Image 1: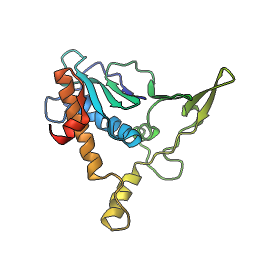
Image 2: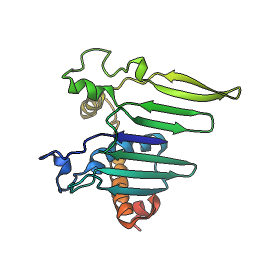
Image 3: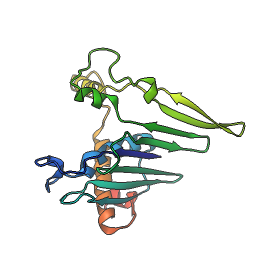
Image 4: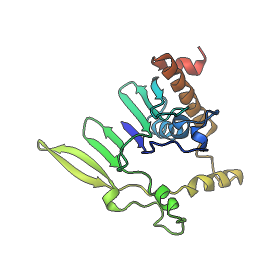
Length: 209
């Protein structure tokens, strides 16, 4: 599986927190947690981590691109981001298996809506138009068949509703402390992998060896 966040910002933004040389800045700590969290929710804990975290733009002082691989027994998950990709909408997800492939372009429509000043107000919030759905490719009778696959509607509010309901004792927390710590472990392991230019085993990192 490959998950990609490509943006086109060749010029630095003065004053932007992610572009200052401070703890937690840089594209990896900004976007990496989201991609890692998605991968781990789908596939669980990896066996090993390999990463390259780098600076691509002139005059940048913190990372603005990364390539991260989560190694599983029979699966390889690639997570990528850069600030020097084409401005046109690019590939977001590509999942390849023995029975077919799923390919998705474009980003979460909620982000686009919020940038336009829209707010959640009805059941249409977070729903993608059909032309933005992903495509499922499967082989049938020696030919590749393509069919659109409806994108599940997203809603940022569900996260905060769950936190509220957990505080009130009405629900169990959806995002656990263990999940958050595992993402943090992956981030730190990826940083070390990039600095040492090697693949690091997850089990050894968790056990502190």
